[in-house]
Picture 1 (cartoon, rainbow, N blue to C red):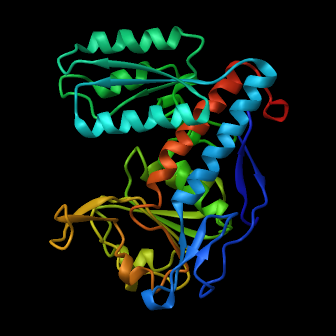
Picture 2 (tube, rainbow, N blue to C red; picture 1 turned 135 degrees about the horizontal axis):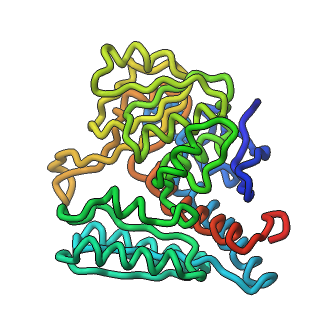
Length: 342
């Protein structure tokens, strides 16, 4: 099986052909169809850059068009509820960006902000109310929550049919089993797969290595690769000599949370590298005193890899784009609308 793009259906995903990325060493620019761009020779990077910003914009526009068609034909629109507990500045920023993205896509957004000292029962009551709201098709509880709240209990209370984060045990369990389809897949791992598929990078029959085994990214990313017929290995903190394993990989997804851990000499020439990491690295030349780097040493890896995502501007923009996509799919299921009849 060659490369394909994910198109959603009530039953799952189906493949559709996409245009390939520009060849390595091609003229500097951006492919309008794939979001790929290549660095100039003067930047000494041989890898084609997978431009997550461009691909995320394509996904978000697809969602906007589908939501508009759904409203016109069926008189319905998706609804997303975001629950925020406390006043962490980073969480508030994330919530604002999600609400803004919903507005741009035509998705109705609901919000409930609770004080930092809200009880667990109060949070569960908010979740229960959104579970019962027929106009709400996705519920997202912003993490992390205050220490006195049991996150697992709160996430488990979300109706799995509205679990747009894909963290409910029923969705994660279905993801792990052949022949069963989860209603939702976690946004960041699904975004990683979309980046590969929309860039024309074949997955089936390839050897893939996921560095990191978190429930949020590493483990679901490995399961998604396996579903697409890759041979998958997970490296983690107890893996001896991970560089030897990574060197075999045609596809590397780095999600270990360690700044610039993966070096160019660890890579198989021509491989595809998806860097999920985002870390602050001291840099006195920057106004903020630091710069953002991934879990991959971009400078050395971009000289060996065939394709690579930058940090920032790679995986990050895809997370909200997939969240919108998940919410739309939830609404289609709720209203019994076949995607072919949107």
